[in-house]
Length: 118
Length: 111
Image (cartoon, rainbow over all chains, first blue to last red; front, side, top):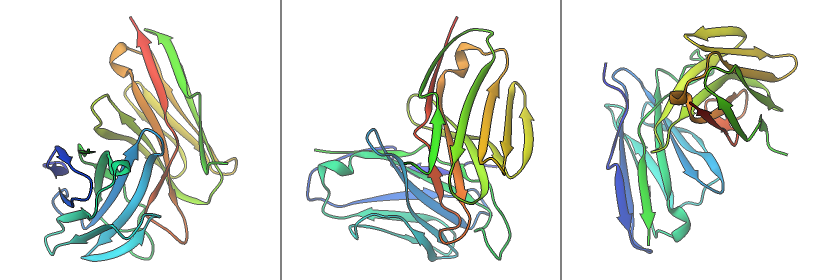
């Protein structure tokens, strides 16, 4: 079974630009979570999507947004890029979303997209 | 105080040594993950624990829910075990499903 894939793997953008990152989950997984990793803050949760609906959102400004498609693929978008947005962006997929639907479900991480903002 | 604390932050060991990394957390959880991250960024989930103990090869993970503590042990360590090990808890309640991460333990195993 193919793992979680993320594209692109590396990206260089300029301040003020916007960027879209893509994540394809493991086949059959309906939940996709996004995380940001920086040297200063470590790993932080951005948001989670399940069945095309945002289930949870971390403490990030509105410049960070995402969506999920009917095939469970997800995209995240960052508008008006700032230098501090330089980071490794990871997505993780899992079979379901915890709670009344069952779980907890193990998360499987993609290789990440390394974004550099200059 | 961070919700997930790991110790030690850095660890250097000789090949063959038994290694223990500790994780304490202060929130209610539904599960705890141990993750491994090699230079270059990719994260691999080693274990997901809700209770007790799990073993995979030379790796053993334990969790004590009452004490809010987990340990990751590596037996007969090898230079290829050199990586950052991250403890992450799946919060139970208001923000179910997202992970709260520790700062990681950087392990270096010398030949």
